[in-house]
Image 1 (cartoon, rainbow, N blue to C red):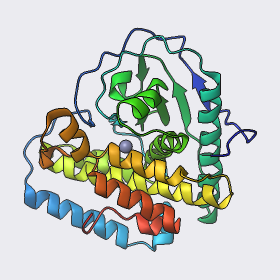
Image 2: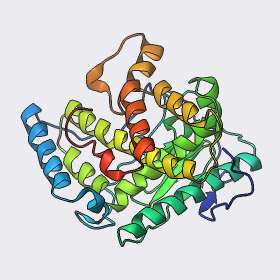
Image 3: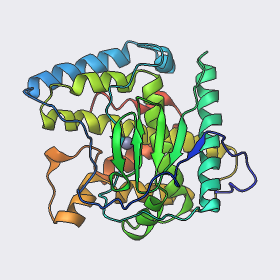
Image 4: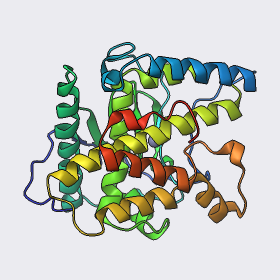
Length: 307
Ligand SMILES: [Zn+2]
């Protein structure tokens, strides 16, 4: 990605010196925190999905952004984490200025793209903040360690990133490349778009009281949409002529490497589909590619139909 010399976002909060301590990893796979799920059954989730589908189809696709609650819903307090499984102690991340500049530039590119898309709908995009942290961080969604991976907190409209995750992405997950990293940021910003448009608020409401398996299914749909939104961003970024050979492939490879099935095979040797909450490698690649191909939000309806 030809990012050097381009605008860098002012919406970076560098909290790396504030925190410390190692994020000592544990858990496998992507997590959706905040439990409290009881009851719920297959029929209930079906009804709910139909409701969402209706909610979606009730609007002209181009009006998705204006639909529903029309903007900022308070976050339910849940956070969307996007870790591939944690594990490394981070702690003393050096102030990597070049990487910080890269992150600030990618963030600026997402600001420009989403501002334009919102504007085309007569809406105003509100930039998220991106917090760089080291080891551990406190957000409106609670306390998080780097092991939980990058995440977006709907409660404070901030993306949280410990940049050591990028090394992990490269070395542990086999997803090298600048644009793999850009995809991670764009995915989190995709959650912010979901928050602004009210999609995430509905998601957080709905998953309360669901069984874990049902909540996981719903989570997959939300995550794949964030992948699709990342693809939409990549589409417009490509139009600016700043993508390089292999960029899209590196993002698609990242989507593959962090698919639930691939991660579970790698970490435990077998897959438990009911526990998938981000989507399979195939699904993640498919939705990222779909957003990238058309650049249309209407192609990112993951809320109904087969994935
Ligand atoms: Zn996500």
